[in-house]
Length: 407
Image (cartoon, rainbow, N blue to C red):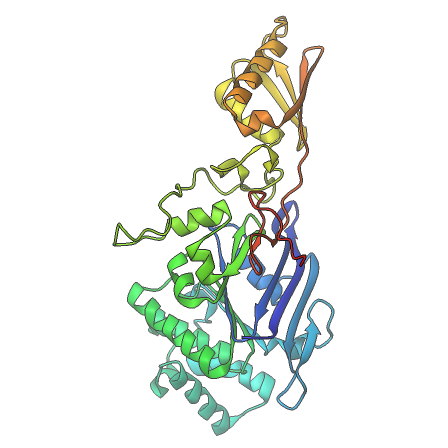
């Protein structure tokens, strides 16, 4: 595989305070299936829709390498600013997660598949009908399905209709947004096999969005792992499964079930704790550090982490906890006449540091002003997604040094 089919540079998509996609950069190669995996709510679907301009990006650049027609030369177009977006739309398509909601129940299958062909290619009459039948047979359906409504078909048949619609205009790039998650397991296998055959026959490039690591293992060439709007690791599929680097990736890989207890992906990995944080108010530093078993003091511990710990363990001592900014917490003692609240907090911090708790090790200063106690943390930025360990392995984790490419 060579050449770039689609490139994303510093893409952002914000919904008010919610940073659904936050500074994502990604390269999808020609004839490649690039997997995008992560827990529900991490921004995968928003990223997929934004790169196709179905949602308007807040910032960033999008590039597709294609041609406007069969006669035009292949070149690189910037989707963020191009005036040719309508013409380029037929070169990039999407297959949604739920075909029952993505197909119009008031339209027969002939019209669902034929509408984009009539609009973009101007086909009519028998010529249009023959093209629709050809597409339906290409995805494993028959001519008799032309006159059915989507609600008269099974889930697998509906998804095949959605795929036929997506390939109708001979696209170069398709976003597959969990295309099998709403299907039975046996039907999933058939649809995945169909997608592989279409890619081989039509030289397609896929962005395959899912939360199922076993599907990633079967379908993809390269994989990006997403967490709270950020890409935390990008790697070749085989290397990612053999030796995942980011702790979040390790947890995802270790969760892949196996009927053979001697064939576990990662024997040492532990199950994830807690929930995915809100993208409207994410943790400071590395967004994964509150759930990470390998976190240390450089990972960006801050005011919210200490506030959560004190509320759980010392709620009877400190009542008011105001996060002035990510790395400054302001506390007030429950008993304002008691003068040893600073001593109490200092003792808590010292005990935490003795047991090498990274939360307490990252505290820089503690000071008392009247009945308020100010706690300051060492400010840390989020780790960059850069090459670490070896070439073409991009990881946003301080456990690994940046790759030194000097000869």
